[in-house]
Every structure is written in C-alpha cells, then in structure tokens.
Amino acid sequence: MKHVLKDVESKFEMFQILNEDGKVVNEKAMPKLSDDELKELMRRMVYTRILDQRSIALNRQGRLGFYAPTAGQEASQLASHFALEKEDFILPGYRDVPQLIWHGLPLYQAFLFSKGHFHGNQYENDLKALAPQIIIGAQYVQAAGVALGMKLRGAKNVAITYTGDGGTSQGDFYEGINMAGAYQAPAIFVVQNNRFAISVPVEKQTAAKTLAQKAVAAGIEGIQVDGMDVLAVYAATKDARDRAVKGEGPTLIETMTYRFGPHTMSGDDPTRYRSEDLDKEWEKKDPLVRFRKFLEGKKLWSEEDENKVIEEAREDIKEAIKKADQYPKQKVTDLINNMYEELPQNLQEQLEFYEEKESK
Image 1: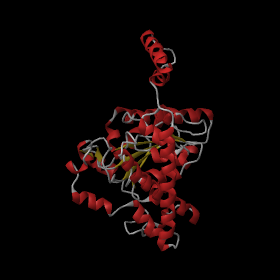
Image 2: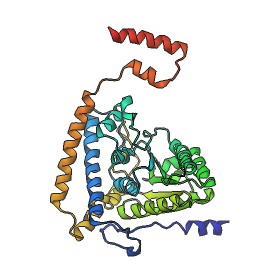
Image 3: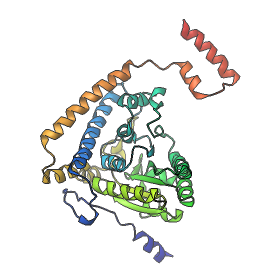
Image 4: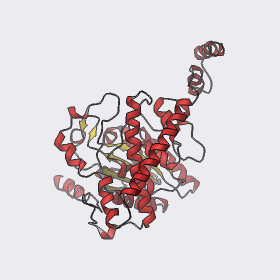
C-alpha cells in the first residue's frame, strides 16, 4: 500500500515557471501573454499590495472592521483571476476580496463589506460572484452547484472557488470536489496553501504529502503550483479553464503560497506560531519581487511605472473609503428586513418597534 501511495504522490511535483530570481526555468510552459498583459498583471499586484497596506492601516484606525491581509498571496489570487472571463463565476473565501474587486466589485463596497454593512454584499447583476464566504469550506459545495448549473444551461463558463489549506480539513471540501467530479461540472477549486490554518500547520491537518493529491479520490485533475509564481498560477488556471469549458471536468489547484501578515486583524499574532526564519525564507519568494525582476529583464517595468500605480491606488483608496464612510448607516430595521422574506411574529414586533423608534 505504501508503494501505491508513493506512486500517487510522485505525480504531484510543484509546477513552476519563474524561480525566485525571476528567471524562466520552464520555457515550454510559458503562457501566451502579450507585453501589455504582463504589465497589467504586475499593475494589479502592485495595486493590491498597496490596498492591503492601506486596509491594515484603516483597520487600525477603526475605519474598517473585519480584514484578512493578502500580502504574499497576490500571485495566487490575481493570476488565477486573470485567467478567467467576465462571465465566469467567483465564489471567494474571506481573504479573496481582491479577486472580487478585479472582477468588478466597486472598492467602496469592499470597504462596506469589511464594515459589516449589508450594501457591501449587494452586487449588480453583471458581477458574477457571491459575497466572501466566512464559513470555512462552504463555498466548495456552492461552487459545485453553480458549475453544474452552468453545464445544464450549456454555458461555456466556469465557477472558481478558493479556500485555504485549513479548508481541506472540512467535509464541505470533499463533498464539493466529489460532486463536481461525479457530474463533470466546469469548476476550478483553488486551495491556497499558506502553510497555516490560523495557527495550525498543514502537517498537523493531513498526512498527505500534497493537498493537490486529494483530487485523486474525487476522480478529478489535480496540480500543485508555485503560488508565488504569477506565470505558473496563470498557466495552471488557464489550462484548467480550457479543459472545463470543453467538458473535461473540474480541477483542484493547490497554490504553495504564504501570507506575510496575520491571519486576520482580529488579534492574531503570527509570531506565536511562525518562526522568524520561516518568514524570511518566504519573503525571499515575494511574488512582486520575482515578477518585477522578470519584467525588468524584458524592459517592461520601471520604478516610474511602479510609482504611478502606487499613486493611483492611494487616490482610489482615499476616494473609496470616503464614500464608504459617508454611506448611510445601517439600521436595525435593515438587518431585520434583509434576514427574512417573511418575518416570524417576534421579529415582526421588533421591526415595528424599531421602525417607530427610527421615525422619531
């Protein structure tokens, strides 16, 4: 039995295109991206890094509520999204707000989501996405259902969903990939393996050598990717999407990545469970540094280009948080009305009480 396990695990070696020095180590796998597309990928990563820095500052100022830092995971998040089409459907986890923003969610609504305001989750019909899922792994079951619906309608699109390594310990993870596999639904399941589910290391969650190999039990494709390599993540996701729309079934993508900050800004202290040496090891793999070196070598990126994006991001964030701050405050009646289509008697009484109170 051990020999069979080793045979399976040997098939899931990490896929990489750019090494830590920004050098191409897998020329055959290079995706077909134009110079403008390569620059746009870098622009989005720089913009998102600034958004993360400012969001942390705004959280500390008390102007934002719940926030899960994203620095370090930009390649995993944004390159996978870059491989999608506008009509593809995103089912994100709570750390995946950047993908929603680049898919069309206005920045001020992303801030309202952080504040706990219901309008943060009121999406326009042309935004193909659900609000960030707080329940760990629940989006995997939902993604299987959305993807199956696409297949039944004959749509040439995919549903993509994200979770962390901790999400693979949930029953919903297995149910989702199994259902999608059974029905050959056009789904892409991304596991962003940042090594820790809050404070629990991945080695304590599973005996599996990789998380990608969990695809085998569901009868679907699986691949482990260098999640700090923007080109590898893009290529893997693009291939998964191409196969899905051809009717060749779903894919599980494990991206080997790292969050540089805490799990969330809600009191987590990563120094209690991560060593300084481990942080330094992963900082050398920074996806922005790696991709910047690659682009500079091709004369496609400069300090001037980067500063322009940084200034653009800061101005956008300034206007968006101003709009979020000025948005009408959420009322108790909003909370009650948005929770139920038909109110039970006790809540109907509470609604009437607060309506009278708010009218004064």
